[in-house]
Image (tube, rainbow, N blue to C red; front, side):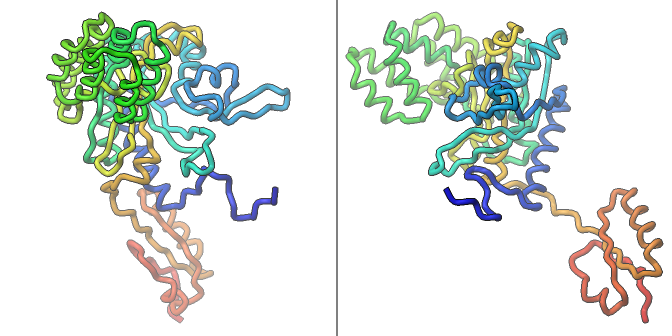
Amino acid sequence: MSKPKGFEKPTGVRDYLPHVVSKLRYIEENVLQSMSQWGYRQIITPTLEYYDTVGVASSTSDRKLYKMLNNRGTTMVLRSDMTTPIARVMGSLLKEEPRPIRLAYHANVFRSIEEEAGREAEFFQTGAELVGVDSPEGDAEVIALAISSLQAAGVQNFKISLGHVGFLSGLLEEALPGQAHEQEALKDRLLNRDFVGFREQLSAFSLSAEQRAELEGLLRLRGAQDICRQALEISSNPQAQASIRHLCQVWDVLEAYDISEYVMIDLTMIGNFSYYTGMVFEGYAAELGSPICSGGRYDNLLAQFGRDVVATGFALKTNRILDGVQLPLPEPEKPVLILYEDSRRRDAFAHAADLRKLGKMVVTEYAADVEQASATLADYQEIVHFVNDK
């Protein structure tokens, strides 16, 4: 294999130029500020974790984890998400913390990719976790915070799709009792939003016309609160019924928040993480077909780290917002330019320091005379001369 050229970088990673960093920081700072106003405290976890703890517990497939050996031969991983490291902290440093616990984060995560896929191996997530609340109110709070976070990021046109893994599991168990392989095949089609493949898969199974019609009816269960009533009629399975009643209660709380206009119920949703146990949701912007946020309830994950407690959370897919959504960003601040010559250097630097204390952005530049200074003027908020006219 040939040696990389000096300007090359690995596939799937990128350089963030100053104007992009400004946009990224705008999203990060505004979203974290919004989360803080909801009582969520920021947490930072290591980029590097043990494979046998965080790596194994993560829902990221093993082949997508970045693994390496430390100097003792222990297998390490670069974090592939933030929920699992936070679960580790919940079972250790925050084990005695009284519940509920509200945490927020902004971090880079890593997932190995196929080179031809054109996807990123390192990207940013901004998210929150609500630990210790097992109620429709807790689920609705997380959805409401996700909506507030998207608005804080500057996303204007979006919709949250809300589902429940329990409804789908109950419905499939009722239609295909004990047929785990067939159930997983159908879930895989729904996960990939392949509704044509879902129907084709149904045709391959030995189902009665009534069973096939019931499962195909699932694809129409997308809309507002009336979908809850329709779903209650489509399945008598106890798990499916309990899941729908829970979603109806979540919807009621969202209406009290006065944000139900941003939400639609979509019972074809199952979430793309194996640790989701209940309510799941995804957010879509008008400009993009891929989700810009996702989340849900994961009541079993923390038990793997010695703290059997319920939790709900979400993450904004910050890079997709950064690259694909038109944001109403403020005009960048122009700096004050201070030009100086040798004899006025001390005065120029003192004036620059005074302006910076006032919160101004200041650039200083050496200029031997006015002619030289005039040649360097650009787009600045103000030009201050500490240069003599010779």
